[in-house]
Amino acid sequence: MNLQLGELTAETFLRDYWQKKPLVIRQGFNNFEDLLTPEEMAGLACDELVESRRIYKNQGQWQAEFGPFDSYEDLGETDWTLVVQALNHWLPDAEQLIQCFDFIPRWRFDDVMVSYATPGGGVGPHIDLYDVFICQGSGRRRWRVGDRGPHKEFAAHPALLHTEAFDAIIDVELLPGDILYLPPGFPHEGVALEASMSFSVGYRTASAKDMVSALADHLIDNELACEQIADPDRPLATQSGKISDADLSRIKAQLLATLDDQLISEFSGRYLTQSKCELDLVDEALGFEASDIVELLNDQVLTRLGGLRCLYFEHSVGQGIFYLNGEQIVMPASLMASIPILCDHHNLSAAMLEPWLKDEVFIDQLTNWVNAGFWYLQES
Image (cartoon, rainbow, N blue to C red; front, side, top):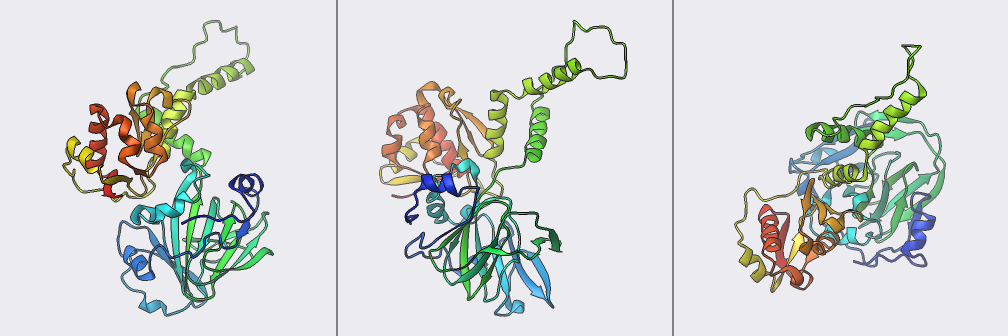
């Protein structure tokens, strides 16, 4: 699967469109094939671990229901949509689609969402707060996109936030292989013209509110930032109820001193590698020995589990630090160079890992990850 940007390059896309304005990319994928069938998608939506929902109208009123689902017969053959989130957690082939957009770093990546819609189906006019590449699979959909502005939003249903009617700056029919890129804040609505599937590759960051809340938990859990303000040279106070500008500066300095690069990177590394959904992990350790992994890599590759997040910081990778599934991992200096290999690549071959395959510490660690289900072996 290869992304075709036509006359654009990834650099010009990021310069001219990313987070700035929507874009239709005709035939971004040649001969695009659905990553799964509607029947396979319905099968996923039967699983209680998979986040799914279906959207439809009943007597003119929008309805939304959350899975798992075991039947769709009551919905008829038109005007309804089935959505499955985090497809990349459950379908290994979704990784090929994600890799097409790796000119955006993975820490910004959210998930792949798949939507199946019958003729007339959609989720209503709405505004997203994230960037998304909507990749049209089988069938056709009409998309209308409005401009950013003070659009009023309202709850069409407790689980559906819609926006008021908008004037379209884009009104287009997407065919298989076409892509619609939408930055945050642009109202849009898609309606299936025939039974169709679309695959949305989404990118988002957490709000400052959520990050600060999680940071507070991190400080409490690890008993950090317990130091109090010291002011041994305090001048005489003449107004006991006043917080002086000097005191305000002390309070601000205390808070800012807490937020050094080490704390922020350790916290955010853990935070950004936590999976938003359940990982499809093995129920118990697989029992591989270190020698098994080395031998099996002769004709197999290690593939990272779908949804598993593995990241490092430019400023601390030289210290052997990276983050995996919400945990900080510290490698010895001799293994430092393995970190970009582990984090930048979805598949790991013997050739890629060759410099460390005789290192006992590295192989033991790799074996532990395989036994935990973080990486799995498959034919190369």
